[in-house]
Image 1 (cartoon, rainbow, N blue to C red):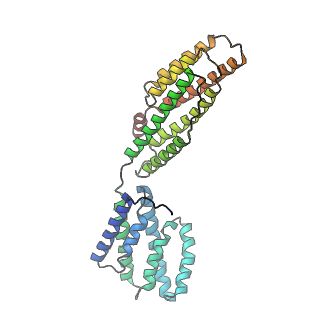
Image 2 (cartoon, rainbow, N blue to C red; image 1 turned 60 degrees about the vertical axis):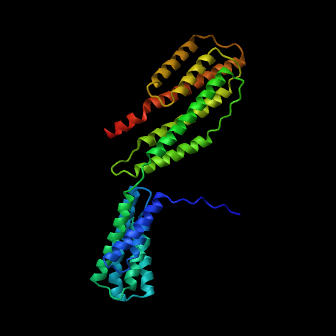
Image 3 (cartoon, rainbow, N blue to C red; image 1 turned 45 degrees about the vertical axis):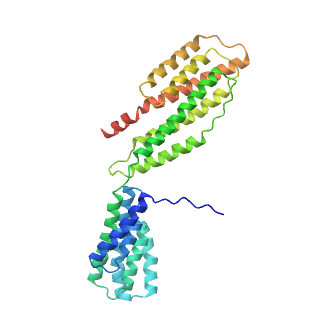
Amino acid sequence: MPRLNPYKIGFRTIKTAIGMALGIIIAQLLGLDNFSSSAILVVLCIKHTKVHSVQAIASRFVCCALILIFGSIIFNYFGQHALILGLIVLFFIPLTVVLKVQEGIVTSCVILLHVFNAQTIDINLFFNEILLLIVGLGIAFLMNMIMPSLDKNLKQYKHEIEDYFTEVFKTYSEVCRDPSRSLDLSFSQIQFTIKKAKSLAFRDVKNHFGRNENSYYHYFDMREEQLDLLRRIQNMLQNIECSDLLLDQLSNLLLEIAENVNSNDYTLLRLHSLYEIRLELDKMPLPQSQNALQTRASLMQLLNELEEYLLIKSDFGSLKMHHESHSA
């Protein structure tokens, strides 16, 4: 037996219901014919973001105005026949594609049917349809200006990603202290979380006019870059086959990074610690056995990847600083 999805009334559903009711009430009060069509306009124009809403409303208004003019002229000359209706649609749809307003095709067909069913095609019909458009699209616009803040969700994603990174670095630190420990972390789930977070951040951009960037989006993009480095670091840790003098220092450094995943103030200090390890490495004699040599090579590569990880965070700065730099 198929499972039913959990019943949930979302914010968009509430806005659609209220908008439909308001559209019909206002259209009735104005004494408009086909007043229920204002509800159809509201449904078609309720979108997830403010920018998409304005684009949809503009496309639908242009489409409806064009079909109202074309339909009135053609039906007046050739009569209100089904074949004429089909021909209008046949030529009108490609026109909307050319004008890049094809999103309003469905709405314009509703207006076209009003003209097709009208007893008389005159100026009163024209004003009636224009007022229907103003009521329906206007209410949809007002409804779409009411958008819930996404900051809470974005912060939740941020904390979830940082907690995961913290656990990864703690695990890496423990492996450095005990190279015999197995290490097989899966990054698929956190990668999916980062992609969802970036999608939500991009949606937040579309809820603000005159802004084409979002500091959270850049933050999650930065974490996605670092995640690739964490994968590579894991591969290098798996190549450690014996003890090395550097492992204790590296373990301490990884633990410090784990405790300061979100701190920008300590990033430069971690880089300083990393460079000290690298200087110490240059003074050490070369390992004598093949396993020890492979382990040392893996550690050197690991330091390079870790340096890249820290530089990415240093270049980004903190989330607040990045936001202020774009708003300045």
